[in-house]
Every structure is written in structure tokens, then in C-alpha cells.
Image 1 (cartoon, rainbow, N blue to C red):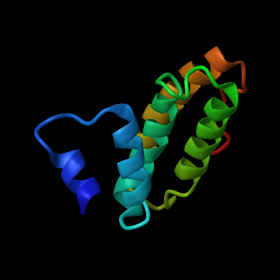
Image 2: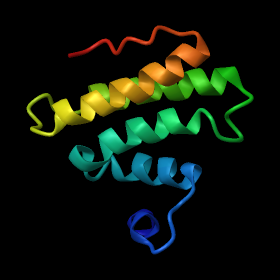
Image 3: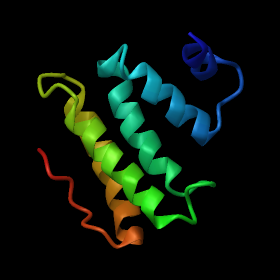
Length: 105
């Protein structure tokens, strides 16, 4: 409940709070929160305390891929979410020096 209140509050949550809330809520409502979790994980790679730690950045990028791969392929919103995710993932992957291609259609 706190995670939902945090995301719906009048003040925008910080990147860490957003990531944690979507991570928690993805268990309850995966169709809504898995795409947002994937984007939040990529976003977290540029924020403290993760930014100076390459191992944490790579872990978050792997989590982002896993979260997106878990989205139901039959979800009608998946293609649009995939386009947004690919762009954000590619930008960050190139800066980290890892393969920028998202391995699923």
C-alpha cells in the first residue's frame, strides 16, 4: 500500500523510491509495473549510490532485461513499452560498454 501511495502522491518520488516501489508492485500487478520496473532499473544506473559502481550498474541492467522479458507477450501494450525500453536501454548500454541490443522481439 505504501508503494502505491508513494507513486500516486503529489510529489514525484526520487529514482530510488520509484525503482523500489515498482519492484514491489510488480509482484502484485506485473502487467502494469514490469515495464515501469525495467525503465526504473535502467534509470537507477545513473543515480547514487549505484552510479560509481559498475557491478551494481550491470546488475540493474540485467534486472531491467529480466523484468521486460517477464512481460506477457500477449500484452497489447508490450510493443509500445518495448520501443521505449529499447531506446533507454540502448543509450545506457552504450555508455556502459555492454551489448546495446535487447535480445527479444
